[in-house]
Length: 290
Ligand code: MF3
Ligand code: CO
Ligand code: CO
Image 1 (cartoon, rainbow, N blue to C red):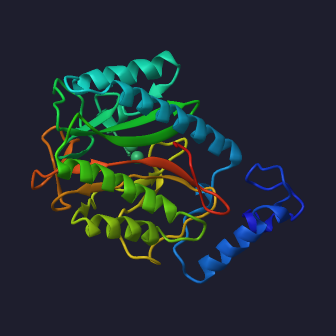
Image 2: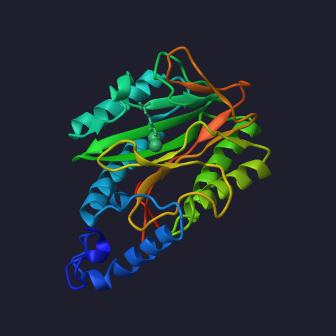
């Protein structure tokens, strides 16, 4: 039975403890209407319960503390394998699991993507030098739920383009997140990101996007970071997903390294990325990994 068929005086499916008629009834009626009108509406099961959201929030908060730890220690001379060990030990010593490790065969506990690397960089003996930029992407499994976030760090003094792309990638993420609210379209998020990147002469990677997240690392929802306002699927209250734009200094196209994981820019120019896990609220958005 779907939400609408429930008795109006039952407790709401979301776990708020409120009566359905006072909670998500109106919302579910609006969703049914949008479906009748032919809108692209994600499946109702992507709307998480309060219990699921609490679990993803706890995992996202853990992930954010891992990134804070990395931010405090990262300096010129550190290797990407050092970062892997910091993340691994911090995580397992607190009873959590570093989700990248063995995920579809990924060999390490964190992704470290340096300079022209777009995403899914594999930690190794590379020594970070003054002037590098690096995205550290942390995903943690805590109590059965995933939290996913990443930041781009500047290593020492960087040239102007490196500083600018790291800042603009962060602003793109923030502007994308600012579009998230019930019944907004995924194209609203993508259009906001693309407009800001393009205004700085940068491009937006198209091969990878944001994703639903919860008790799966990558859930059944895909968020392109480019697009047209008013187009694509609508966002529903209590959907949880990532916003993680990858911004390139030159062309948006990527190439895969021989390790079959790491994407790099086709032209060898810089790429930067920031990521948060977010939740659609009744009014707007909650950044779970903030
Ligand atoms: N954390 C990445 C994301 O944002 C996914 C990494 S998959 C891995 O979706 F296997 F490379 F870790
Ligand atoms: Co992600
Ligand atoms: Co990530």
